[in-house]
Image (tube, rainbow, N blue to C red; front, top):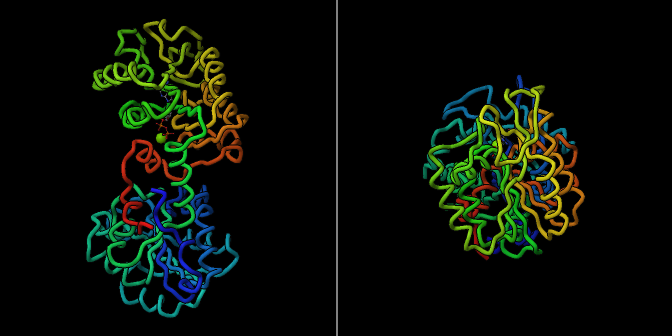
Length: 397
Ligand code: ADP
Ligand code: MG
C-alpha cells in the first residue's frame, strides 16, 4: 500500500497550471444547515494548500449526506465552500453541479492556485453505481486525479475509484498519512503491538479481530461484544448485549485464538445496572457473575488497571471501539481511563472508529494521540486486511 504514488512525487513544474481533480471527504455533520464539526475540512487543507503553492487549478469534489441520487438543497456543498474559504482566507468558487457545460466553463476560467468546489457528487446515482460514463465526465474536467478522501476510500464509487481509469491518479497528503500510520502499525510496528477493540457488536468487529490474530502481541477485547464471547463459553451474562446469531463465530474465534501467538485479554470485572440510564444504581461485579436481571455497561476498575498495565509497556497501540456505554457519563469511566492511559503512554497510538474518536474528543485528548483516523469505516476495513478500492486504483511507484 505504501508504494502508491503521491502528489509529492509529481515535479512542481508538472503541477503548475494543471487542472487537478481532488476527491476530498467533506461529508461533515450539519445541523439546520450549520456545520457542527469541520475537522474533515481541516484535514483536507494540507493537500489543498500544497496544490495552491504549486500553482495547480484545484477542483474539489465530495459527497455530503445521503441525497439518494438526486439534487437536494439540504445536501448542497454551499456551507462547506464557505467554511473552506474562511479557513483558507481566500475566495473559493462554487459550481452549481459536478458535471456539465456550466462546470466546464468555470473550470476553463480557473487561474493557477484558484479553487472550485463542485456540487455534491451524490446528486447523481451514477456516483455510487461507479458508472463509467459518469466517471469519464468527472475525469474530463481535469488532467490529474488526487485521492484525498480517506473516509470514502473503502467505496468503489465514480469519484473515489472509477475516475482513475481515465486520468493519472495520485494519493493526497491525508491519504498518504492515513495509510502510512495504519500500515506501519500493522506491518512494521514498534513492539509490543497492542490492539484494543471495543464497541457494541461482534458483527462489525469480528473481521478486524480475525485479521489481528497472529499480528498483534496482545489483543484486548472490551465493550458490548465481550458478552457474546462469554456467552459462547457458557457463561451467564444476565441481560447484557448478546448477538445470539454470532455465538458460533465467537466460539470458533476463541478456539482459533488458543493456538495463536496473540495473547487475548478480556475484562475481568464489569459495571452492571438494572436500568439502562445514566443515573441508574450500579454495582461492580466479577464479569463471570453478572446477576440475571442486570446488564454490563462499562469495564470495572480491575479491568482498567489490567489494560493500563499492558498499555504502559506497549510500543504501538491500535484502538477501535469504546469499552463501555461512554455516551452516559457514569459509564464513560472505562473508556476515558483508557483514553488517558493512551495519552500518557510513549507508544505510537493509532485510533480508528467514529465513536472512539468522539470519546477522545469528549475527553479533550485528541492532540495527545499520534494519529486519529478520519475514516471510521475505511480504517476498519484496512484493519480487516481488505483492499480499499479508492487506494488500489492509485498509480504504483
Ligand atoms: P466505533 O465507532 O469507535 O467503531 P462502535 O460503533 O463499534 O465504535 O461502538 C460504539 C458503541 O458501543 C457505543 O455506542 C457504546 O455505547 C457501545 N457499547 C460499548 N460498550 C457497551 C456495552 N457494554 N453494552 C452496550 N453497548 C456498548
Ligand atoms: Mg460507531
